[in-house]
Image (tube, rainbow, N blue to C red; front, side):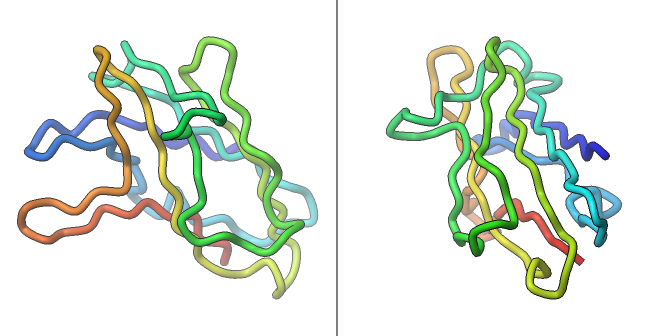
Length: 130
């Protein structure tokens, strides 16, 4: 099964990558088989590319590191437009919520998903295994 999450550029100051988590699209139900989570640069972010995983501001990084065995290693597509990761949510031990950060370069500027706005609103994207 595949979960698709669009990533756009929110240009309200300060600009940041916005992950579409509407309608619980970031909530992963229990399943014996692993899900594939795919983030795709969309709309105004589609001209950019996710940073490599070895970049000082990597395309994907855990802010809250999950236990081993739940998630596979993230993979950036060859064109940099997508990142995928596997999520094996098959037991009570794999239930939880984890914050991550995405980084992409758009127009020679690096934007990130983990941002706190001037109003103090934090836009931490999460993966939630139910």
